[in-house]
Length: 276
Image (cartoon, rainbow, N blue to C red; front, side, top):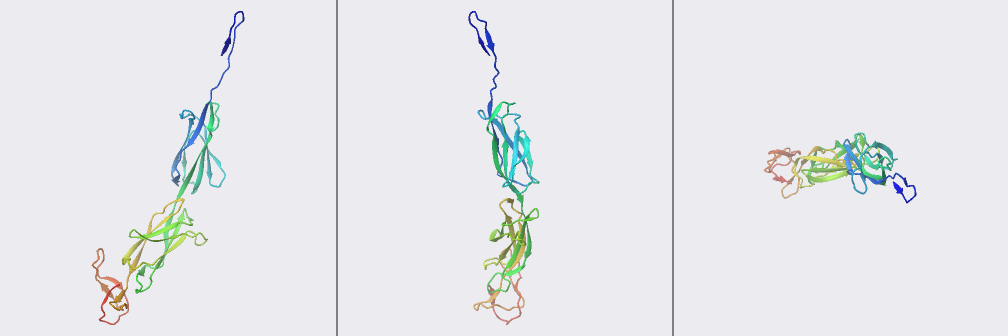
């Protein structure tokens, strides 16, 4: 209100209403990745730009975009909401919180948009679909077969997953890997050939396969068993012993006595043999 007065003059005043506006900004804080099925708590905080104090009852719009697709208006309301990802696609998402000038609350925006990139990760499933041999021989002078082929199928929600990596190990030691194919008819499949070297311990070996892929939670490890055998050679002559049934007593820890190592046709008696 402004008022004037002077001597013999009639005083007067005028009143003018003035609105003082503050400045507002929005901040969105999300993790980089979530697993499909999680319920994500989304907090898009609207605050006073100068004091950083939160502003109540400020309307927020949330936009969601799968990489490469059109942005959609997803949710409206106050700044606390949730997102149940059970039906979400495995993909990268851009989540944007948007605010506008608010004359009711007397705020003009300084930061209208806050965007976070979020990966929704699917779950991998893996299964062994084929194993060519259950029993193999490890040494050059041993019998055949020398290797086994193990095929793994990698999927997510019944979709075949290309370019997934499958690592194979036994007794905690990595023995190789393969990558799933992308061509029709072989998509999601990879085959690993195991030809154990002469240092591999003979006996039943448990092979563990672990499938991983960039946008997915790793599959649960899967296992299969392969019997590793070795041959017998003549001491000093580097020749095989042709024995009908050879049993060796093992003194190694955790080994069974009288283990059958090799079966062959009966041969010349009296040869002294040792384990190769």
